[in-house]
Image (tube, rainbow, N blue to C red; front, side, top):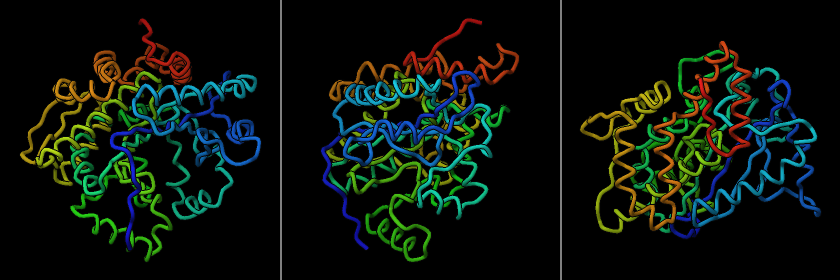
Amino acid sequence: MQIPFASSERSTIGVEWELALVDQDSGDLRQVAQTVLDAVAPAGGGEHPHIRQELLLNTVEVVSGVCRTVREVTADLQRSIDEIRPITDPLRVELMCAGTHPFARWTQQKVTDKERYATLIDRTQWWGRQMLIYGVHVHIGIEDRDKVLPISRAMLTHYGHFQALSASSPFWGGQDTGYASNRALMFQQLPTAGLPFQFDHWSELEQYVDDMLETGVIDVFDEIRWDIRPSPKFGTLEMRICDGIPSMSELASIAALTHCLVEHYSRELDAGRELPSIPAWFAQENKWRAARYGMDAILILDRDAREELVTDDLERLLVQLEPVAEALDCVEELAGVRDIINEGASYERQRAVASRNGGAVDAVVAALVEEMRAGRPVLHQS
């Protein structure tokens, strides 16, 4: 089969942000997504263009439009949040984001009443019902289909960087898992989820999709749930690595890093230079290391098996990307990556809050709610 790739303006950016709905008093999840969606629905019916349903009734997703800068993205997302608050506040419901809810039980969550979600749960059973997870997807416009797969392979060399920066799911069912991102390893249990295949030619992707459709593994392209995937209908490369990101400032920084890296590699292709890639076995190891150790992960950087602490390599990257950030008008947002390095990723902050409160994870929920309200990490004194 042929998979057309939509026309897209180069290095445009869009973001999808999954938000949990939590009770103001208990901190537990509330199944009120449909109430929110009904309240924001357009007068003529249909779905809100920027506030959407998700698999579970404890979740809403806010989606930006097609933007040229990270600043436009965050303004778009904030408008949607500001539209949701007048509905959730009287319900005593707060918005929260992390890769997982620190203590909610997956057995108590309700699935959205939609055929595609029922089909997913019916097929995936126990693992599907456990998908009490939240993520952030960043789309970057690619103007030439021939660039998509080389840039995708190059972005895979930075998988661990994004996983470490966004890691926000150390807790599951009230217990510390020992992982910075428990979500990363849970989500890959779904069919077609996890690390992408590293195809060299678009025809190989088309053959893969044809095989998956023919054998009934998928019904539509979007059921390929790779951590990095082309999005043909939008003409983008979609980065789906990140755990749920708790605050707007962190989201802006990680989106800026994504934006700059894709544009950097697009320029490298324009200059006729070959883009970096790593073997699948190194990519798999990097994913595990970043999920386990977060900002303390030592990543494999290239085919020669050079290794470096993720924070040290991020510092090098930030310097390298400064000219691109200037061109994309996201210098300030990209610099915020250093704040995450210096002040700690979300999983580190969550553990610190739990430690200060005798291991009580309800305090972690309160801190995450506070960060969502503040739009930035809140550093509590010990």
